[in-house]
Length: 105
Image 1 (cartoon, rainbow, N blue to C red):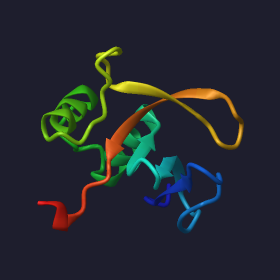
Image 2: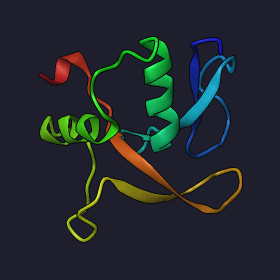
Image 3: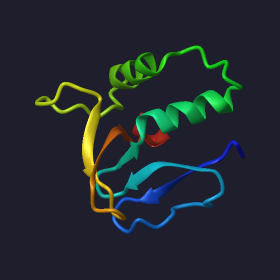
């Protein structure tokens, strides 16, 4: 593993950065959200920390939710949402994380 990740643009399906490494999801500029494949992004976080990342996957999502960064619909009450993959046109389950900029504080 190269220790690198990349995202695809949600509208175009084209890479938004260097494509070396693991594709972990999409960047939706219109909704200001990242759509991550839940297990893939967590596995990449674990690799980045040499498998010493102390927070479980569910604890990480809970922390993102508590910080107001994890998108959870009232109807679903779960951490994954369905989005259409712009390349395959198939619905896929992802976690939606709001893009947070330093100037938003």
